[in-house]
Structures are given as structure tokens and as C-alpha cells.
Image 1: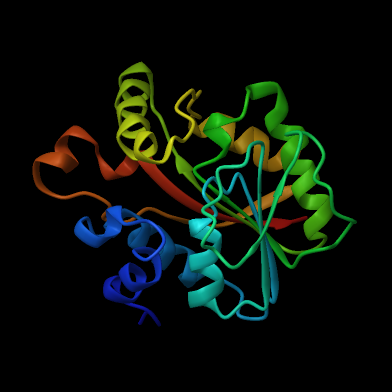
Image 2: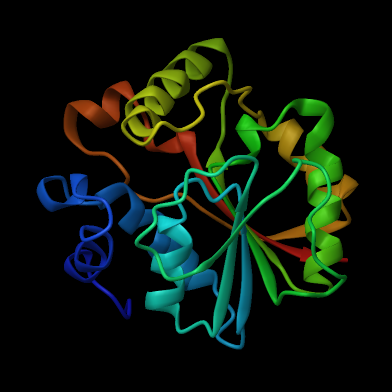
Length: 216
């Protein structure tokens, strides 16, 4: 049983992003309930990499009982009303000491990271998380048709927030290579009912994936 509802999530997000006053954050609800099921309740400090507006980090801190969260991205698009720590970095080196956080979150981030920079970024995440896990929500493509579907989803989801739309979507082999290359084992994989009806036919739910990586 989840400790928060879709209405709880709406009340948390809508004051900072009015779009959620008339459009329920149903997609985010599925993703965050998946995250909560995998979440270690001992976490006190978290880093959200590629945090965009910072709204996701703020919501996680509010609903998951964290003491502290930092949202970091390569540009400043943070909503000024959010009461969280934010940072901007160069996309390569996370400006934090080793083992600064209990975990790192990457929410729909890695497909926007240039392919040569993905493994170095994940190794940076491991450095600052120490023995803590990575929580990754992203996409799983089976080919060019899926790439086109996902590009459309990125446009729909990111344009209202002036978010990044350039992307290179990962196949299953790409995910396996990154997991082992960064020194992790994938402990949990989940999907979820992100879309229903005709929308699910056009954009199958198998395009979405959530993972928990443990260092090995």
C-alpha cells in the first residue's frame, strides 16, 4: 500500500506548477509509486541528477520523508517557489565530496545524456552515493519505431516546461552495458500502467522502465 495518493501528489505539485491544477500528474504518480516500492526507508540525503525544474526533487523530499535533497542540472530552470537546495554543474563532475548522499535519482535523464558521457556520469553518481543505490526511471526502446514514439512523448512532456527534447534512447543491451560498466547490479525492474486505452496502444507501457541499481 502506498503512503501517498494521486491527490496528495497533486496538492504537492500544483502550487508550483499550475499545469497540474487541471491536468493530474498521473504519469508522475506511477513513476513515484514505483520508486517508493523500491525505496530504502533509511535514506536521509538524496541527489536528484538532471532535476530540471526541481519539482520532482521537492516532491520526493515532501512525500518520502527525506531530511535533505539536492537537485542538480546543467542549466538553471528551477522553479523559484521550491524550498530545496539546487545546483548547476558542467555535466561531467558532480561538485560534491565522495559519499555525500545515501542515494542518487535519475528520472528520465540518461536518454538525454550524450552516449559517451553516460558511463562517466554514472561513475560520478557512484562516487557521491558510495555504497548507496541508484534509482533510475527511463525508457526502453526496441528499435527506430519506438525511438519515434519516445521522441513524441518527450515533446509532449517536456515542451511545457522548456525541457530538453534531444535524445538517444537506450536498448536493453545498452542498459546492461551501463549497469556492469558502472559497477552495479540491477536489483529491481518495474514498469507500471502509465497509459490506458488508445494512448496505451500508441505509446505502449513497455516503453517505460524503473530500476534500482546496487553497487557490487
